[in-house]
Amino acid sequence: MRFLFATLLLSASLLLRAVEPELTAEEGQRLELLRQLAEDDPAAAASQLAATLGKDANPALLYALAVFRYQAGDAPAALQPLEDALAAKPDFTRARRMLATLHVSLGNHAIALPHLQRLVAIGDQEAATDWRLLAWTLLALDQPLAAETAIRQALIHAPDDPELVRALLQALMLQERWLEAEPLARRALARDPSQPDLWQLRVNAALQDRDQEKALLLLQSMRMLAVADSTALLMLGDLLLDQRLYEAALDTYREADALDAGAPPERLLQAAEGLLSLERLAEAEALVHLLQPRQESLPSRHQARLLGIRGAFAAAAGDDRTALDLYRQAIDQAPANGRLLLYTAPLLAKAGETDEAKRLYERAIRLGQPHAWHARIGLARLLVEDGDLAAGADQLRQALELHHSPAIARYLQQLRQQLP
Image (cartoon, rainbow, N blue to C red; front, side):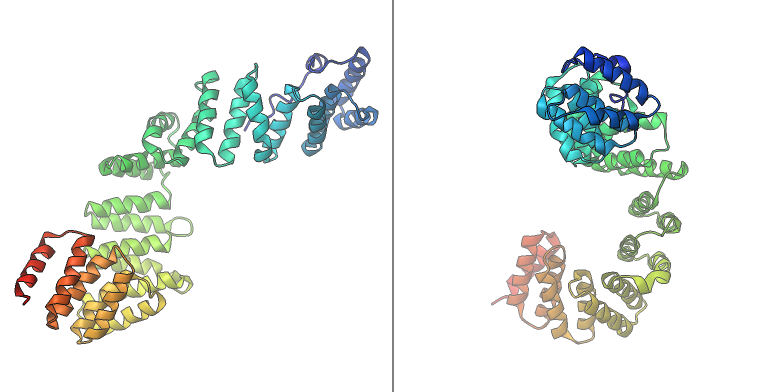
């Protein structure tokens, strides 16, 4: 923040004209001599001034001591004389502004905040600087809504200031107000397109507006400009997958994994599961292959998902025995993974292990949505096959309460017609 210390570089005239509070003639002469010394040795000037100050020192001299210490490179040592000056004269705005500025520069944002709030309430000729400092402080304290207000006040004084525009974008992004921020981001990118976070903001705005085609175009632009990180490339892969552009999606996932430390394993697993649901086994297997070098270091929940995907490969190949073995291993590692329970139960039923299949469906039901709906329908079918039409109908009824399906409603009606 280049503006932080603009108010601290004081000339001789500023020191001598510090009328809040006033200096005596003797104090003014002494301060002028010390100022001249400070041009070559501010530490010596600070030391000499500190030696002359008593308990009831003039707040203006305490302020000067803080300036000399700051000029000597010792910002923390400048804080106490400023505190003392304000204790003696609370309306000494020049001292309060310097104190707030120093606290901001030292990362003491919570301490700076009340000083800055008091300064903006005064609204003197330095209001533009005060609002700017307050904006950065509020952003640092994770208060983006209040920061937005401060930034807009600062923009009144400097409407084209790129740092303030960037700060406003940051405040809007932290509030996930993508659509409001999008025009600002577009103009900023027109000046400098090498800002990936602003491209991502525009992507988020397009998705919030349910415009996937625009989001796809923006992500492809990021890729072309070489500003797309792995997160952006993975998002592009997902959108290509939604468009059923399977090979292009796979290439994009591979590109994301080739960057830096590789794509997050959970994102590759998610993409592989998505491909599996679309019966694109070859592409899903290619993504699983990317994870092989990292397989041993994966946490158990990821290893369970990987086993589940391999189980799905085996089931698709007609090898139910291997699929069941892999699914059971996966469930042992992730017993609350509803997807695994739903994959395994039909194979168990097919193998004649109906009771175990029912137990897995019941476990999936207890996990709630989105698994409960599928689990109740699967359990209903097993109950009907066992001749318990009433229990099967009750499961279908409860499934329809979770999510209405015309086909399931017709099935339930047929069952009820068969009940005694």
